Amino acid sequence: MRSFRILFALGLPLAAIAMAGAQDAPSPQVPDWALPGSPTHKQVPPPADFHRPTKTEMVPLGVFDGQSDVGSAVVPGASSYDAVTHQYTIRSAGYNIWYSRDEFRYVWKKMSGDVSLAADATFPDPQGYDDRKAVLVLRQSLDDDASEAVVGEHGSGMVHLAQRADQGSQMTDAQYRFGGTLAKVKAKRIGIEKHGSAVAILISLTGEPMHQFGPPIETHLHDPFYVGIGFCSHLPAKADTAVFSDVLLENQAGRVQ
Image (cartoon, rainbow, N blue to C red; front, side, top):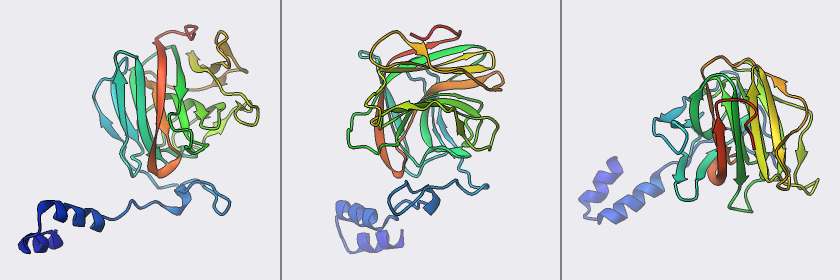
């Protein structure tokens, strides 16, 4: 602020003052553990006591009731809905949706009982990070370390079902990850279904009818919980975009299509 006053006193135009302020602004501080994996670096779990409070906007979006930056990535997220195309666009940075805490933009509805959720997920930028994740999420709370069940589609095309069984515990995933560039298969549509305590992944690889893949996992989400779509760039300080089309959300099981 002192440097702004000096520049103003010197009679510099406001645009020049603003530019000077932008140059003086510190770049986002990213801890080493949050940096993405590379040939010279490995991402590791965050310290057990590391948390950032989630930032929430109680602004409805399409069929959803609110929007949150879960874990408050160092670059704020954004989300929008096109009422003509019925597409949701989510822009977010965030180091991961994994380990014992998450950073991602989440568009959600609070629900109870059984749930069916499905969407087509695409990434407009083909050059984005392979591990970026478009997700369908059932989540106990908006805390960054909440228990949850997630169907995630990665930028590489890999799809998997994962869960954090208890708040603050490490994420685990079912041993039937599939698809992606190695298999030369990318899903056309993904879905998640909760029936009692059982949560299953559903998929259409090429446009065939949605079908369950593998057995369900057991979760212990208590009513009410959060249901929604989200995205994480997998880059702590760089935002990317995912688009969700033809979103289906029903308050009963067996409705994914």
